[in-house]
Length: 244
Image (cartoon, rainbow, N blue to C red):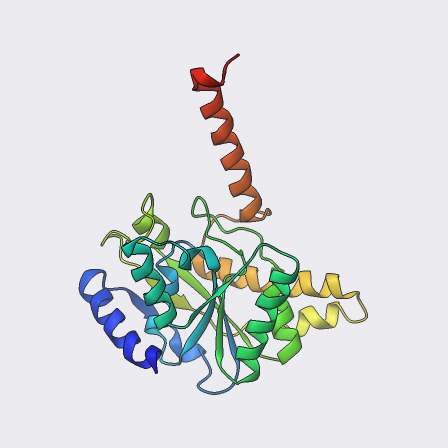
């Protein structure tokens, strides 16, 4: 019920302030389980994509988005819950299994699951290697994977945590469902890890074809860790108190 009430209100404000657009929604089946697999450019993706899709979309969101205690953090958390973003701990191990369980439950109810195969926002606007959760969901449920490219979101939100600039305008481009028949034929008899990787790569190929982003064969999370380590090292070298 909250989703039904919150979605038009949130999108009414979003259209006045940012006027996001979408095309290709005819590629999203009107009934049954569907996986929307999108690139991840900015926090605003999780509002501007599902807010413009007629069907209700359930996203798995990082739990730390919901944990801040400031009024702004609480407002953002309330908006996220209002548009069916489910907080999930992505720290690995049992937390990863809980994310898979939550996603499977959405699809088994015949609903739409939104997922970012990159696992986190792109640090620089490029398209990073996909994680295999999207393939696990599809192969376990038979749900079609519909690729999506968020265009302009990285540039609009560069340097801002929550609210994007009004320009460039953010556009969601929805492509036709990923055709996995040839991929699965080529992987017939292969071990599970190889099949999952091949399916995931096929999904990322389609997202790349829609977005036109530069492709990086590395996980975005690893790049972010490296950048943080480099930044910490640079601060240590310039901080007089860190010297002996």
